Length: 172
Image 1 (cartoon, rainbow, N blue to C red):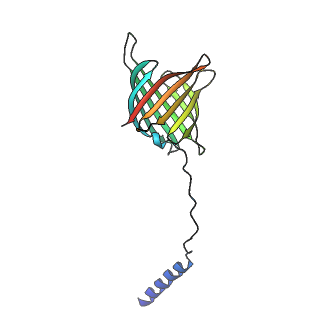
Image 2 (cartoon, helix red, strand yellow):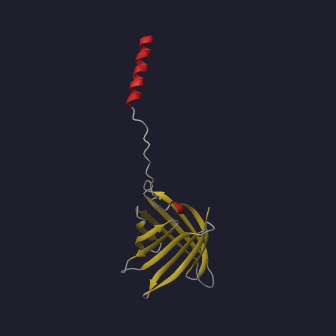
Image 3 (spheres, rainbow, N blue to C red):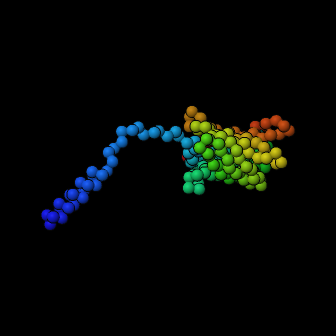
């Protein structure tokens, strides 16, 4: 029994002696990789779209093992002034590269399928969507000082960028 204890202690001593000493070299710091983590969550609020008031919801979540962010967007506008109610839904997938460039795809309930290209910086993102053969627009997402999410959309109409919606959402 005593011989086993001596062998065990000797083995532990050898393992400890062969272990490298802790390094005193500084550990390199990593720069933060741009992401869309700041927008993940469920957002609800008001929207003004094509001059009409409505309600907007955005669910943004990590997908594809965290390599992308999925948007589920829904806008409901009630009937008003002789104009019918309408509902608009869309899905987007956004992939952010280490340099902050964004690429992705957008599809919506109006039958559009748009490529996405943009840039994320801190807690904001600007994305250009569409193609010259169909339509081209730009969407801007940014967190305001009060924590709300401001989303604005513009489209190219007759050679000029025209805003068509602005939403102010709160995280739920």
